[in-house]
Length: 414
Image 1 (cartoon, one colour):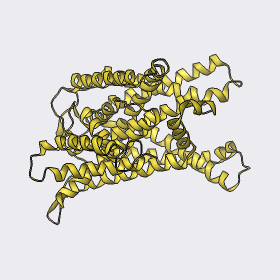
Image 2 (cartoon, rainbow, N blue to C red):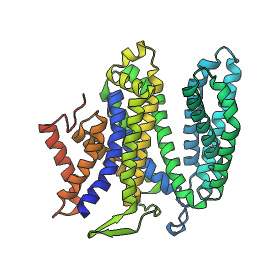
Image 3 (cartoon, one colour):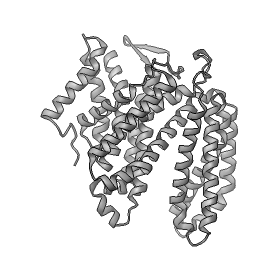
Image 4 (tube, rainbow, N blue to C red):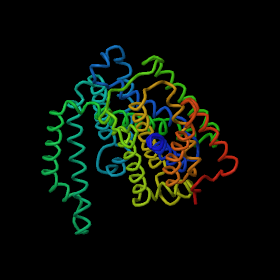
C-alpha cells in the first residue's frame, strides 16, 4: 500500500511534467531544456515569496534586481500580447503613435505592479486582490457572452459585455474584498504567482529568442544548445540568489499523514494526484474541444501549411510555451513541498518528464499521463529492497529498455 501510494504521488508530478513536455514537443518538435528551469523557478518562486515565520526572515534573499528583472519580463510579455491582440482591430481606428504610447504605459504599469508584488510577499493577499478582482470580472463577462450568444446568436458581444459589466464588476470587487481578509492565502497565492512568472519567462524566451532562431537556424540541434545555455544560466542564477543548499518550503495543507492499512498517506499527496488528473482533463479539453487546440494540432502536423491557411503560428506557439512552463512550474512546486528545493532539481525533473513521455509514448497526451504514473510506480516498487538513491538509476534503465525494445512507448502517437 505504501509503495503503491508513493508511486502514484511521485507519478503525479511526472505526469504533470510529461503533459507540458508533450504539448511543447509535439508542437515545435524540439527539446526545450528551459522546461526544467521552469520547474525550478516555480519551486524557488514559492520559497522567495514564503510567508512562514518559522522559516526565518526573507530579507536574506530579498533582491531588488530580481524583482526588477521579472517586472521587465512581465512588461515585455504584456506589451507583446496587447499589441498582437489589439493592433489588428485598432489599426484603422487609432493613431499608431497614440496606440503605442498607451501600450507602453500599460506595460510599464504591469511591470511595476509585478515588482511591487514580489517586493512585499507578506502582503500578497492585499497586493493581488485588485488583480484577482479584475480577472474574476473579465471571466464573468466572457462566460456571459458565450452563454448568451449560444442561446441568441444574433446578439452583439459588445452589448452583452456592457449589460454584464455591472454584475461582473460587483462580483470581482466582492472576490477582491474577500481576499484582502484572507492573510492565510499567501502561500497558495505564491503558487499562482510563481507559475505565471515561469510561464511569462517561457513565452518571452520563445518570442524573444526561439522564434528568430527557428527562422534562421532551421536546425533542432541549435535550438537544443540554446535552451541548454538558458537552463544552465538560470541554474547558476538560482545558486547566486539562493545559494546551493537545499531549501524547505512552508508546510502546505495536508502535511499531517494519515495511517491507512499500514501506510502513511499525506493529504497533500492526494491533492497532487488530483492536480495531475485535473491538468490532464484541462489539456484534453483545450486540445480536443477548442479552436486553439485544433490550431496546435495543425502546427504539429505541418507548420508551413498552417501558416498558409491563416493560422498565426507565432502566437499559438508562444501560448504553448506559456502553458508548458506553467505545468512544469506546478510540478516543481508539488515536488518542493514534498521534499525540498535545490538548484539541480530542474535538470532532474526535466529528465524525469522526458522519461515519462518516452515510456507513455512521446507526443501522445494519453501516453503522458500513463507514462508519468507508470514511471512513478516502477521507481517505487523498484527500490523495494534497495536504498532510495537507486530510483534515478531505475528510471534510466527503464528509459534504455523502452528506447531499445519499445521506442513508440505504451501508447504510440497516431
